[in-house]
Image (cartoon, rainbow, N blue to C red; front, side):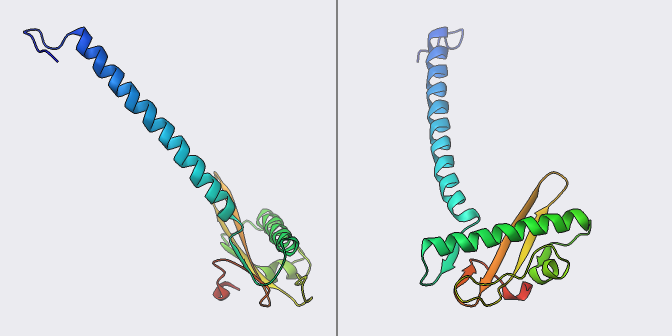
Length: 146
């Protein structure tokens, strides 16, 4: 670039704008690709990062359906009980009639679990944690919350 008494000319300014536009376009493309990759990984792990020992995918779907039922029961509970409960125990939902006793499809034993409610006035997020007698356990399950 040639600097004269008047500063840079229009030609140099246009080259600078083109270079900035190019880097901006590349950064947008990279950001979108990165976002796609993290969304794919996030969606796979968001709700269903579970440990399953010796069971088929149809059993996984059954456990996932149970977790979904737990979330629906917790939503009904939160509508009826406007308290600040963050951890809703499965036993509380069963006792109050929001859900029936949850049994392990593999051996018909009673399962335990809880739902964590992370929400405010703008958004509501429920995450079910289920443990079924060594056959299935949601990842990050914490027995202290039962």
